[in-house]
Image (cartoon, rainbow, N blue to C red; front, top):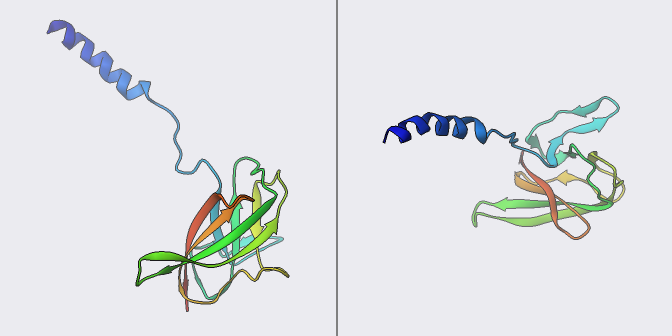
Length: 139
């Protein structure tokens, strides 16, 4: 019993400091939204917008290694409690990019026409999720 009492403080110190490791909430790509991306950077970052065009931003600490990607919108259906496909857009990006914005262009409108809650995905060329985020669209 005496040995156990002597060992207990060392065991407690080991538990407190021995398992000390860095952990972060986000250690991969992050997807978020803004009203517009221009020469001054992002304008109007939020997760709540009125209907209309939005810009989808993706930021990462390392090169994403992607070339052909899809931005997909799924809309939440309050009656069923499930997300349902809304629309998607394809983009070509550079493999060494760490910071990408997706906005309206000739082939994608990036428009949220109906109020609701949307889950937005960045998908790789094999339709696997790279990152995702939620946005609320109001009138």
